[in-house]
Length: 222
Image (cartoon, rainbow, N blue to C red; front, side, top):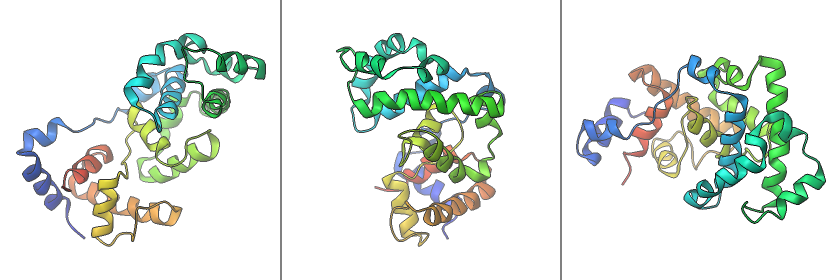
């Protein structure tokens, strides 16, 4: 297995120096920072990620203020209480992105966040308490309990809100395949666990958060 030291050296070579590499790294939020954010903040970002999937991010971002206004600033209780008639009204709102499945996911994920808040006190508390050693378990929980959070949507949402996570992008998957960790881009739970175990090894070696490690790994490909 290639060491993280070697990966970092390759990233530095590709990007032209350590300062260039370090300037490109995402930052994970502390548990305290995660807890401070409101459930509405998390629901808004979760829904934003879902609408970004398959669409140009800048186009979705330009329309997001209209979503905030239409969906009561993503208050989870109010979103969970949306009726079918209200969803139909939103589907006729030309200021929104009128994708029925994604519009419906706002209600479903409002319910999801409410359920989590009842269990843990808040969604931020739930994220903060989830052990980083079980990152894949968190991805699976988001997929199982939320709506439209399979594939990379769950991990990208976590990256957006600052919960430490690695990402298996195309470049990262290429490195994992080259190192013999997996035979192809991991999708099954077994393959994802193999990838997670590899990231654990790199984390133990360098002490960096997963978000930094996966970004550095992605810089090693050309």
